[in-house]
Length: 274
Image (cartoon, rainbow, N blue to C red; front, side, top):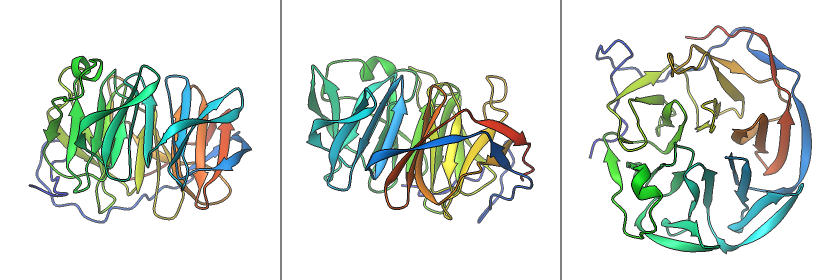
């Protein structure tokens, strides 16, 4: 298996690019109004108008009526989006929420994402990359034909304009030509920067966190330019380990698991990155 090797740049030229950093000048965001939310989580995911999270005890919670409601079961990672509600447990077993209960699905992943256009994606314990086409994601089956992509990523997430991921070296990649029933796509392009995790929202917005706990938003994303143009660092107090976004609301987890809900983002100054 090829691990963490992607050498194709946007123009199709082969390069070896290692250790890129997010170098942004004047990258800040103004107008973020953040509220502290009761509770403590190690992972949170927002999508399709819903928010789910898990805590350090692997307990599962849903944000309902401005409060956390515990959901039966134990997971280390949960995801909600157009593809439904999916999760993986400490043994890397895969589950989907079906008929108001968790149903086991054959396979093994450490991270899963339901943000694609009614399809799911994820990474396994060895950074193998997988996706499940829409027709199979929406089926009621439990033995499903997950498709493996070439390369290796520790985190893989999809949204309206394609899929993004980061590898073990914190390099960032975008997958071209992903379609609901052709989720494998066609090729990787490396994106300048360095992130420990990246998250694609249902509407195609992309956010990420770097190794210093700083939060970034990808600017310039559109259907015509799905990789965007640059990164903007958000003007936030503290260090964070996880970010997710849906319907105008940014959810953040601090390094200690404290939860923040931020709204009304307005970018003050364009970023200058390479």
